[in-house]
Image (cartoon, rainbow, N blue to C red; front, side, top):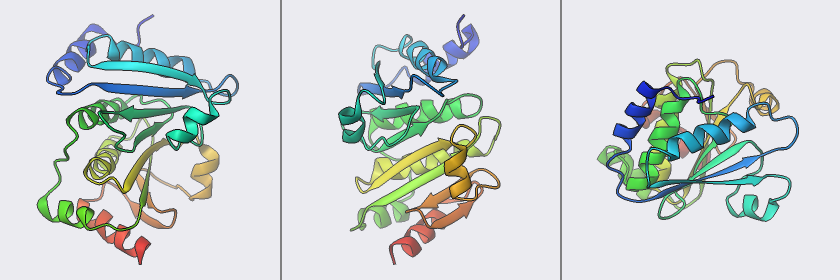
Length: 213
């Protein structure tokens, strides 16, 4: 049974119709303890079916450690969204509900390779000298989460030093507990600075500055 109905497929087709460059979704699944792994692969394949610019590659995380390490994938299920180069866009878990739009925006960003950030944010990211690890904890039922997730993807697209991971907190409860995720969206910068809610770029910039200080 298809996961996406005809109306959604039409919207996806329109959204991805003007992609300038090809995008590959590299998916890492697990044989055990991965309730949504089959659906993640199916969802990606249904998206890829509407655009000749999108392809899907799947790996078993436990059997493909070299491939996972090359993409800085440390847990599964995971999706690496790759354009002409690796912009550091990752999604951990199933991009369902509101988070389906995050996946689509990630595909668009990886295809275009240019962010829509304001000039001051671009200038700051262009001045980075140290790597920045952005983790955005989300849930599929949170209407505000895509805004925080897409902002992280924008920043990763803008700077080679920014790596953006969107994490579905219900599927990665141990990690969510480690970071004391009480509500979503929650953005974590370099494992220490926290920004709650769908914050504007200047708040994430402030957290990055604090994390790098």
